[in-house]
Image (cartoon, rainbow, N blue to C red; front, side, top):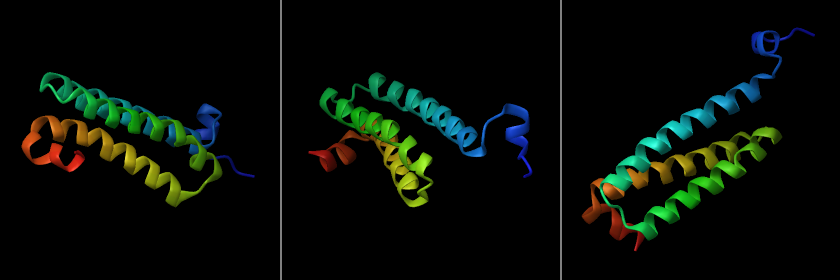
Length: 102
């Protein structure tokens, strides 16, 4: 059987390479959004709830990835993405966004 380029170069299947890339994308975005949340004094309870949701999503994410369930994998990834972006959005637009989480 033919090996893909990622397997030849790195000795890992493509899905593991993509999982690794998605992990770094998520981490970089989280750092940026969390910085905004901290600097703009986001409500600590809301910040912790959204951060916990992101953590749960990142912990669950490898399971649908390993099982190759595209819909579940995408939904888990999007939920983590939305939680991350909501940290910054709630900090920047508190009058508009924070009542949605009350």
